[in-house]
Length: 425
Image (tube, rainbow, N blue to C red):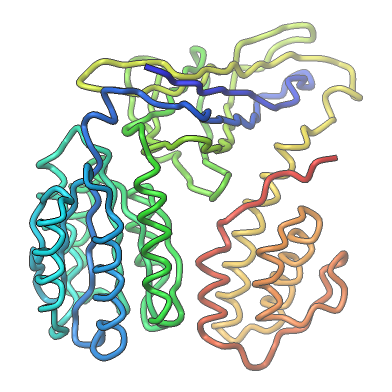
């Protein structure tokens, strides 16, 4: 076993008398040699779930098939894989197999026979994938789902049930090709299954995106890691969020382990990976001079029922009557509070624009430009420039563009939750 995880908490631990809220940012880094041998020996299982409904015909399905073939060829021989295609029903095109040269050739033959046709019932696709992943419960289990359309309304209840059943069974990155799919729909999947959602505007880019996701999946070497948070008696966890590299609200994913202890899923980790988490804990207020351990956050890896603590950090609270101490906001807490506001403001601005409320849309997107400028989030600032004319970034003075490409709007929506780390001073 070689874990080499480090954890560090950033906060202003000083609170004014009577204050109850404690904020902290926890940075977790996985080192170069991060590995738990039992986890890796369980293997890696990568599944592709590909939409083959009628709308995927033509260039989309051709590009998707080329991308799947390339992905198969790139799989390391010690990995396992499977492929599910989905329309009105799921089809197991490639059942679970090891990525040997012989199996790869058979998989490629099967992929070449894929044709597009039918409707879109995503619940059946997820269920088919879940059954394959459950065949290797000790493996690092990751999937990629590609679609170009919207799930049928008749599938809503089954879709919810399938998502619930898939939770903790595998992780899933979602990609929408073109502009006829719904961001919120794919984000429901990726959020529940600890993955990402993004747009592939041009079908010819599917292959490159598949390769990036595959490379990241094969780089994971510790699965099923949880964030365990202990809080003192009488305390309440107001929220727990991953805030870097993406904003993922984990608050509702809390799993009680024992009194005052809950676990949040974080999924699989790879070497040199780094993530930030934002905790907000409400505690019983203290008097001036009182000190309290407001929380203890630990990363826990569970293998074959055995828990291993791989990192830990403490969250403190000290009450003071010194205004200079208690009014100072930690730079990282302030930064990520702003990044969360940035994502929310973009969503509200796009919603207002789609409703035809130009005044609110301009104000919201202008505010987003200002936050992106102040926080150094140039990636989001660049996306904002596709929907607004920026007259003055520091003040957030903008004008809405009259004509916006649909793919630009969807790119801004899908990537609004990507954050930047605090600029070095």
